[in-house]
Length: 265
Length: 347
Picture 1 (cartoon, rainbow over the protein chains, first blue to last red):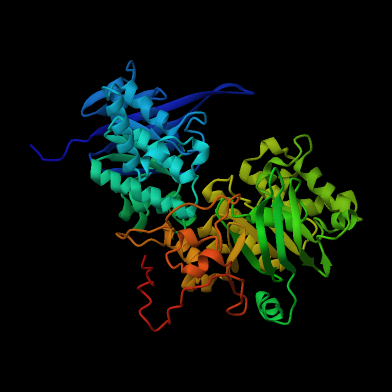
Picture 2 (cartoon, rainbow over the protein chains, first blue to last red):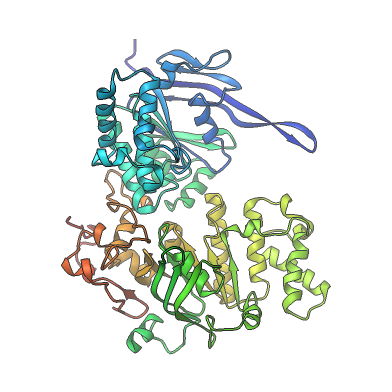
C-alpha cells in the first residue's frame, strides 16, 4: 500500500448550474463545470480567476450554502455534499467560511462578543458563562485583537476594515474547524493592512494545522499564501499545480493574463 | 516657497498644466472634519500623474474639490487651483462649464453607470461634441465612431444601448466621451475599481498609449499601488489628507523616502520574494475626524522621534519633481552598496 496521505476534502466533478430568466426564456448558466480537486491536511489551495469564473460559487457550494447540481464532496473519505445529502452540523463545524466584505459579514447592531458567542452556543462548545468568556478572549487574542476586554464590547462600526476581518476569522475559528474557506478575504482592505491578514492566516495555519481553500483574483496574494493553485476560467479548471511552478511556467494563456494583471509578469 | 514652487513642478521652464496650492477641504457637520489639509501638487504637461492613497486619505475629495465637483457638505476652506492661467476655485459657473470636457475631462468610478439608458452610445457621444463645438451631426457621428475605436470598441457599437455592453465596455465609452473634445487634462477617479482585474489592465494600458500619442495629461486617482506603479510617470502619496511624498515612479521604486511610502511598497505582494515574509505597516489608517497630532503617520511609524508627535512636517522639495514631508526621511542607498538587500527598518 502506498503512503500517500489521504485527502481531507475531495471534490469530485462538482457542477453548479443556475437557471436565468432571459428574453428567450429560461436559460441554464453553468457557474462551475465538473471541477475536481483534493485539499490535504495543512495545505493551502488557491482558486484563482477573473470575475465570473465561478470561484466564489465553488466556495459557496463547499460551505454548504448552495447545493451542488452534480458531483460529490467527501470529507475524511465520507460523502458530505451531493445529491440527497444535506450538510450536517458536524460538517459545518469542520468547514467554516470567511467572506470578502467584513463590512457586510458582521451584524452592525451586535457586539464582537455576540458574534463569537453565537457559534459557541449553537455548537454547544461551552458549558457555562465562565467558559464562554474565556473562549471569547482566547479567540480574540489568537487573531491579535488585544486588549480583548475592550474589543469584546465594540460594535463593527468602531472597528477598522482589518479589525473586522480579524473578528470574522475569530468567528470562523470558534468551532475549531479543520478547513477554512476564504473568499477574497483581503480584497476590500487597504494595502498596508492586507499583509497583516495574510500573515495571520499563515500563522494560524501552522499553529492550528488548518487547511485553506483561498479564493482570489490576485495571483500575487495566492503566491504568498498557497501551496497549490487551481486556475478557473468560465467555471472550468484550466490549469493546476504547485503554486510556484504554475507562476514560473504558466501553460495556459489565461494564466499569463492573470499574472500580468497581478503585476507578476 | 518660490524654491518649492519651481521644484514641485520639476524645476523646468515650462509651467505646470495644473497647479494646486495649499488646498484645504472640510466636511461640515456638527463639527468640521478636515479631509484635505494644505495640499500642494503640480501636474505637468503630457505626464501621467498618479495620486495614491488608502481609504479615507482624501485623494478623491482633493481632486473633486479642485475641479469644483464636490457637493456640500464639503467646503473648500482655502487654496488655489491654477489651470491654464485661471484659478478654478474663483471661476464663475459659466466659464467653468466651458472648460469642462473641452479642457478638463473627468471620468468617475461610476462613469459606466452614468450613461443614459434610453440613448444609443453614438447619440451620447455626439451630444457632447455638439454641445461644445459647431460641427454637423454627421461629422460628430463619424468622430464618435473614431473615438470608440480609440478606446478599443468597434464603431458598429455606436448603435448599441448601454445595457447591451459589459461594465468594462461602458467604462470605455465613458473614456471616449472624456476624450471627445481633446482635453488637455483627463482626470480619472478610481476609473477601474469596479472592473475585473484583466479588463482594468487593458483600459489603463490603452489610456497610457493615448496619452503618450496625443500628449494630454492624466491625473489618475487610485488606491491600487501596483497598477499605479506600472502606468504613472510620477506619483503623489497622500496620508490622512496630507501629502507625504511626490516622486517620479523610478525614484519611488528605488528609493521612497517617506516611511509610509516605503511601508506601502513593502506591503506589495507583487514585489514579494518567494520564501520571505512581508511586514506591512502595523496599525490602521487613522480616523480623519480625530487625526493624530504632529505628523499624521507617527503612531504607525518605526522611525518617529519626539518632534514627529507634535510638529507637522512641512512639505519640502529634496530634488526636482519631488516633494517630501517628513522630519526623518529615509536615506537613499547608494547604488554601489549591495542593491539586492533593501534597507531594512529596525523597529
